[in-house]
Image (cartoon, one colour):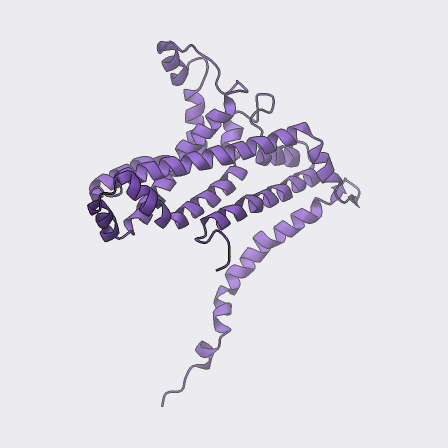
Length: 295
């Protein structure tokens, strides 16, 4: 009889294979989270590091700019996530049952903005939205809508940023939804069609429930992306006008690298982490089949 390899039969062998990745994750993800929380409890100067407890957090909640950044971030999270899921689902439902060549063209067209550099995309949009000679203002003028500085108007700047972000991210939703819908049994859809169900009814009662895992993934990743939104803000508005487009990530950046307030920046990072967890938990509960209740 052949001698069995005791190393392969050892239940702990598998852990050795994941050890390098786990160490990488622990050093560059877990440790920074705890270290950021520790730094947020101190006040650092050139000569000493003083423990101040929750003073940095109290400072944040008495700062009107920070409160405005929280509101702006939540606004972008809700608007961008909702629009990305809605238009991604709408486009995917319209094309997923077409021939493969047509689907490939549609996926390529919508995914193109996703693979384009965010810096390049932001510069293109800044040129298009230029109030002096931008194409969008030219079209608005010819349509009799007048001209205006959409990025310089506090009432419109967040909507413009949300629109630009949705355009850049909806392609990912289309790719994911089309792939997910491709895994739905054609027999189920055909049976519903034979029973007289319209496409809208098939979408509501079959497609949307069966693509819940994809919706969950897209919604969670969208929330995280909006919390980290930085490049578009920096290149289009720099947080203006009058902090109207200031987000939590850009507020963190300003405090860490412009004002040299690293303890305040660490406190903002902790708040962003807590906010991400708070927003992710209801999504997981709502998308679980039993509404988060035990059977």
